Structures are given as structure tokens and as C-alpha cells.
Image (cartoon, rainbow, N blue to C red; front, side, top):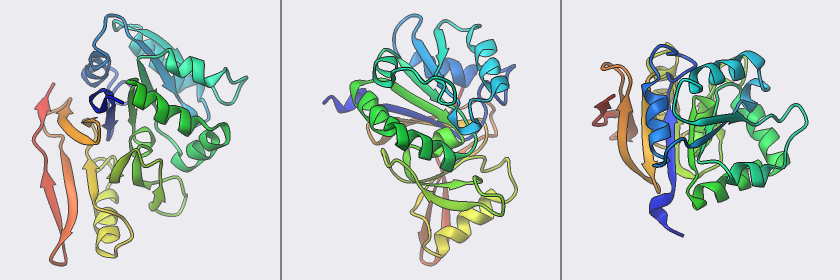
Length: 233
């Protein structure tokens, strides 16, 4: 397996669903396929295949140089392996991460995604579609409070999206770290994306200058929040 072919792009927020007037993160994702008119498949499982979300995806991506499609799990589901392996990019939407992963595991879609990643299909996603690739994520899948949940583990550590966009994200992540309930990892502002090649960060890209990504850890009993170098698109 060529380790350098494996790519994951995790968005804390932004992209077509949050910034329809600024598709720079979406363009960046498509560019990583390194071919003209790449095939990109949107996976909206975390919202139960919400019709409006799917429509917003097509509205945005039909403006770009690509061949867009989407994968439904709540209608008649197509043959997954052939569909996924025919794509250049898989883009996973936001929503309820716990429910999304439960559906995927029932269909063994998590295994198909890992194989696609190893074959060189670019994997990307926002919010639920960002944290799902890590060992752990901070999720609002539950009604009462943010919680830690185990994810697919393609990438080591933890991930928290919407770090600057929701007031309880930062204090919750810090508390979880100090209590040892979550592994050290990454915090992603809205409009910030971390691009992995293999299991290493290649770069951080942002669609607005004030957005950042941070490496989060505990040092000498205190939370260390280290901003990562970024490129403004």
C-alpha cells in the first residue's frame, strides 16, 4: 500500500453548507483528487439523508469542475463497494455522528471506507464527517450535553469541530482532557480544515483569516492549546 495516497480532510465547519458564497474549502478538497472533473459523492447519513442538505450540495458542486452524486442509506441503498471505489472524493456531511456510525456499521460501510482510503479515494467531511475518522470525537448527538464517543480510528487521537462556533465546545474539550476522558487531539474552528496524508498533517487551510486549528493536550496538569500553521485560501 502506498501510504502517501491516503488522504483525509477534516473540516470543523464551513464549506458549502455554512458558506455557500465561499466554496474555497470545497475547491481545495476537489483539487486533492489531482485530476480534471473528479467524481465526488456526498454522504448525508448523519441527517437521515435530509433532502435540503442534499439539494444544497448539488447547488454548490454543480458550480465546480466535478461530477457530483450522493449516497442514500434511507431509500434503496445501492451496491456500496462499486459505488465508493468509482469515486475520487467521498464527502461526509454533518449531523448525528452516533446514528451515522450505527447505520454505517450495519452496512459494513466503515470497512468499505477504510479500503477506499487505502486505495487513494480522498475522504473528507464536516463536523460529524470530520470527527468520524478519528479514534474519538466530541459529539452533540445526545440532547443533554456534549459527549465523547469512539469513532472509526483511521486517524489517532481526538477531534472537536465548531471550536469557535459553539460556546460550550472549548470548555467541554478542556474539561474532558483534564479528566482523562478523551485523548489529546485537534480542535477545529468553523471554516478551518486539516489535511492529512497518511496519518500526518500535511497542512491546515482556512476560508476566513481568523479561523484556526489547534493541537490540544495536557501538560503539567494544564490544557495546552497550540495553534497550527495555516494557509488562507
